[in-house]
Length: 501
Ligand code: UN1
Image (cartoon, rainbow, N blue to C red; front, top):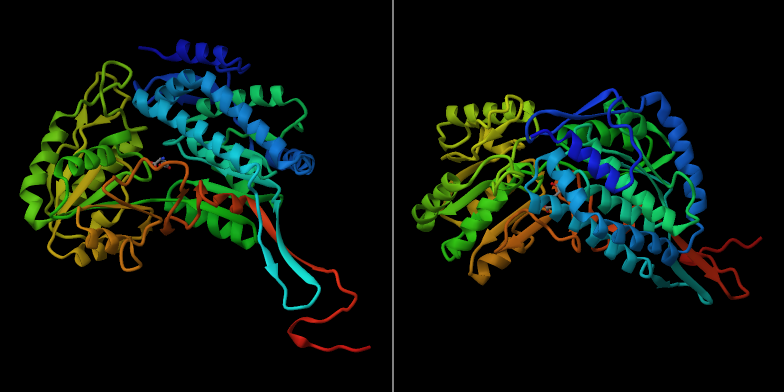
């Protein structure tokens, strides 16, 4: 199956006027490893002028009222509803997701657009009592400027939408550098947004720009003083490079980096639910979510019941092209991902792991990298288990005391997502308490992945500390001004200071 024509048809359907044949970046579908398009890349020395244009757009956009800005997100949500099937299919072709996950990603975009429309009438600040008579204090929230979005291949469209919906409704302009592995879905999103902008009518030119480029282009965005906020999703390695550069120029950042997410299965757990949650969390998206379940701590009392169930779920799962038949595990993104997985499995073997799965699954396409998801029973929580491998490997370990499981869970660098399966209230609340999980996301009786947009999304420690999506994450896209207004005819100084001239 060659997807080139289908991609061209999808682009025609969303009226995107793009040259998909003559660019310098070859785009490959992980489904079969074949090149499906060639797109044009931007060069690092072009970034300055692009940022300038974004800044000019910001200077106009900030004067639109927030409810009017919300209208743009309402229109974007409508366009996404219209093009959901086409965009979802393109996500499957370019990122390798199964159809329901490709569509789920677009649904996540629709949801955040709806959220942003509501937010457009709820961008509120506090009023604060003053210590001085006849004075009032308040907080005013203002847009930041140009928001740079750097996104990863694994959620090629949803993560952009979390950032762009919030950035636009709060009055910023946006500049997006997607992963070089997934430029087509980005171009399609840009075309869909353009339709919404055309219907909106008077939005400034260059309000939302897209840059297809390599690391040097991302670096030029990161170092540009006119990019007020960089929201970057990717590995902790990337964050270690990007974070200090932004900090050095006192820019703002939202970093959404690695995860090494764990699930605890307690003695009272509903074992069927726990099995299904572990299966989706660890094998879903071929283990390529930042929220994927990578470590499982199983209580001694239920270990011998649940681990065979999990292993048999792993044996029965169908791996293969998700667009042919009803395969539930699609491909890894590329050869590097496959090599990294194999390297981690060899290290686990050296550490004495008992491994089922992990081998390459042959589909006859030499350049497509499908694998059987791996479960690795391992006795020690150390070495490779402490590292995030962006692939479907689930390390399983035993525990006896909940506190030991929580300590192990928390003793890795990353702090994104976590879950406990228990029907015991004390255990559940302990896990959620200050003595429990140290992650940005902590769940009870649901898995580590698949968060809804209504909550703030992100994690602690080496995950970077940023929050995107719901709750009050919008505040990161705005700056706070504290205003003190004196409506008296005196000029008292705070703290009782006197300065009589
Ligand atoms: C990511 O993998 O970068 O919670 C984002 C989830 C999805 C988002 C994952 N809603 O799994």
